Structures are given as C-alpha cells and as structure tokens.
Length: 110
Image (cartoon, rainbow, N blue to C red; front, side):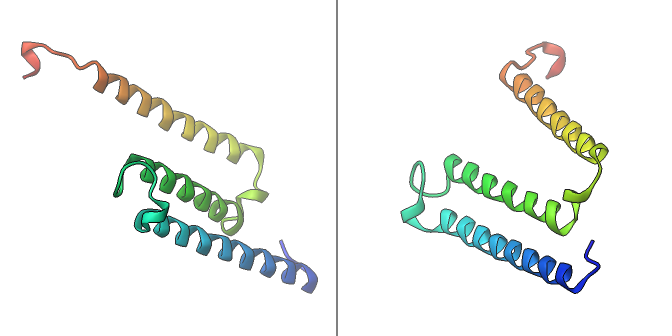
C-alpha cells in the first residue's frame, strides 16, 4: 500500500481517475438507455441495449473490484476462486438455457 507521501498522491490520482471512469460509464449507460441517437436495435429499450448496458456495467464492476477493493494486489488463489465461480455461473446458465430449449413433456409434470 501507500507508505510515502508520493505514493499516497499517486494512489489519490488513481482513485480520482477511476472515479471519473465510473462517472463516464454511468453517464454512458444512461445515454444508451435514454437517448434515441444511441438507440441500438429496434426503437426503445431492447435486447441490444441491454447487452451494451451489461457490458458497460461489467467494466465498471471490474474497475471497482480491482482498484477500490484492491483485488489487483491479491494472490493467485483469489483469481482462481473468481475464475471458478464465473465458470460455474456460465455453466449453470448454459444448462438452464438448454433445459428451457428442450422441456420435459410428460403427463406426470403437469
């Protein structure tokens, strides 16, 4: 962490830059959802706007986790746990999507 006044000033500069990036990301998310000029896909809020908004939110969450929660200074074990949990979520989501695409039709399930 920051032990010297120079390191503290550098950390403050980093935090202010991340804050500015988060502010721009928030404004961009609102603009994509509200402004007709940035309306992707069909008119109004639709699937394309949702995907773009979620991508912006993912970038913002990564910035918060890496900088403000100091995960960029953690050991490799933390990264493996995070990667494993993301892989589990993706796997379970894929299984759910497959199950919804091929439902069980049986008289005992009604």
